[in-house]
Length: 144
Image (cartoon, rainbow, N blue to C red):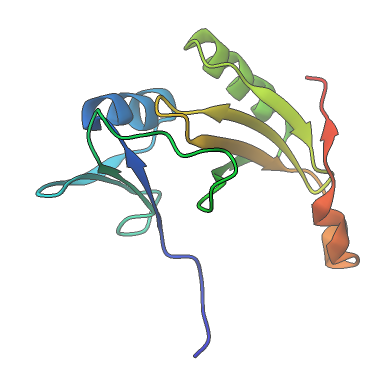
């Protein structure tokens, strides 16, 4: 077996409407389908579906930061720092608190969705990783 590509990511959320307002309304991910049982929303970025949310209910517990599970999901938004600055402004105007990080290979904004799931949006900044793969492990504050 050989994995060819990452197919999609599914996050658990408490409320479908709130998740749709965030992922579609704030982040602009196009909705391609909904499922009623179990309640899910599927988003597309050009594939049949690339991302989805599965509703677990308003009383769902928030996992501890030290529990095993998905750490974050990342979406590429472009190639330039200007695009990242625009995203920062857009997110902050929507009331989203962002943390800018320079990974050398990418420049990123980290923030939480309404359920506390960590989301990253990033732009590619360098292809230095092609010669030195360890360089993807950089983590410095980013001034925007």
